[in-house]
Image: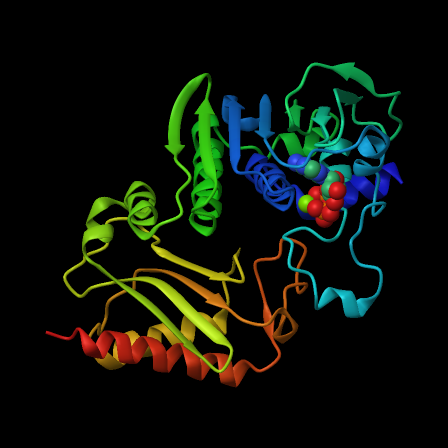
Length: 327
Ligand code: ADP
Ligand code: MG
């Protein structure tokens, strides 16, 4: 099982940023409203994530680190119902197999916290008591210490931290109601307050996408036939300074999908943005049964059951919104 974990880790854990992604998703699945991320040396030395979510009961700490023991999928049909970000029960065991790890947690119903150590092996000792507020802390050190070939592929501290920042920004855009803090080598690099209104969301948009985009974008919110599209699209006056300002979320999950890219691009080009790269932060919400998010372990791809319908909805909605504001 240990070898299987290490092999699976090759798919799930490519670099420090992928560890951060999985741990952030777990914190969100646990209902956290505040998440703090501490990074040392680009994540190669240390990645520590603290959340105030529901926590893990003492009896489930070891299970959380065991392969598929926690898979939320009982049958294939359930797959269609999954709304949480994680569902494979693969991330923690994979991370534990290629790092030294301390999992500390206090479950919401428990009167104290417990912690468990992992040293890259699959056997864990007994949980020990620890002082901990409600929620979970995962402290991952020495990533890939026992897989030297992979450790060699880590880029500079700066590059790896850049990937972590990008990852956190992408996730922070999907949950305006959650506060995020990011520190690198004990220095704070990002602090995002939780918010539940549009002006708060737009402050976060400015923090993440730049104030130029926040000022020169159009907010839209449109619903039809059980599909909802909302978010911000860059106006023609906005000229993109960030290399990649295209953030698309399907049911809260960040995706890169050809069908979506195509529909958006077509709408832009058709109206006024000839030759420009569209800039947007958009959220598509639909019945989870109409979308399969299981296409790839890193879960960036999606498969729509009715691709045509989704494509047309995106195209028409954006086309209309953009045509309305044409000068
Ligand atoms: P999953 O695909 O279920 O997210 P993971 O390997 O990422 O699998 O996590 C295993 C399990 O550990 C989760 O299903 C969850 O029950 C528990 N868990 C992991 N991280 C947290 C956390 N931050 N708070 C509460 N529970 C957690
Ligand atoms: Mg997970």
